Length: 238
Length: 250
Image (cartoon, rainbow over all chains, first blue to last red; front, side, top):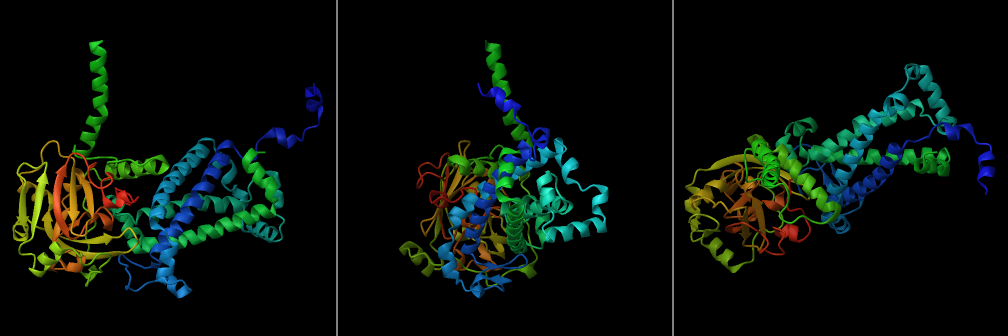
């Protein structure tokens, strides 16, 4: 009985035009959140169990370390007591697969739907120094919110997402695989690429810190653009 | 009706034949002896089968230059089993040590250390990769496990796994694909010396494509079986009995 009155309500044009985030982006985003959370926590468990990092092929307790958690106030035994590597290894390798498959689905789906080309590749005029400078200045004065509300990505946003997806994430996967005795037997070039198994482990850890910083920045941006409306649009698409 | 069954049989044989052609080896397993439940089990299968496909040509694991060797090689976990039999052998310089090879081999037998040393040997400078995170390079000398099994007449057609038990009450199993790899050796030498007690004397297994915990030390016996269900909790190894991966290629 109320159906007519609802349809008579004036509707904002944007709502009917198109979704801010497609199904693929939304589904993959939230699977990715769960996978990354598990990867981070399980990775920390694995690191705590052997809280030193080295460069090269060799590294063991007593060998010259590049980083020792003990220098930062957490002794080897204290770290070991906090880290559960059995849990860590089981969940790290499980969610590595979830992360990888989800990522491939995301990239494949959005290449097919032309999301990358249409919405994430910076347009020619966007990559000029003047444009980037203006956007940077606006950004730090919190003026970039108009991008956020308009449903398109800013140049900085596009560039950082593309670098993250096509450079940084593949490097994280490869530094992970370069630590595996099985996979490096099949692909020994990975050992050369990163300068050895221990170097790969150290780079994987540095990459984790950078990824955490990226996520912190990402969440702060979302908060600045209106946390609830942005999270809602990543769930409902609108 | 008969036609349909034979066609179904034929269809079923396609992936098996494909696997055989692809790998050139029918002894390969793609899943652990007991697959765990849930997402973790699915990931185990993905990890192992991906690895086995990538390694189907049995390439060698990276071998390093002598300059990269860690000497002394680090010792870790058990360095001296508190086992009367082991201590007696060690005090006798392992002169009376015998390695029994039993189960699904043509001629079950025992081998002395000298007999194992008289088999064709292999020396490899490889990285020991501990699942905890450390790695070190050593020069290992030993007899390929495949040659050791051939000394017992070779495995019978029913054989699927090799189960190795140790003096410190560990055990692990390996499929024949892993056993047949040229770098899978029973090492009696490390860095051109006799294998030190701290590193697993008199014999330790080297499986270079898997993590440290599959590279058992202080070997006590070798059994060739068609099923690992009767050992420990039935998962195929002491580490997997305690919830670690059976396939430790990662």
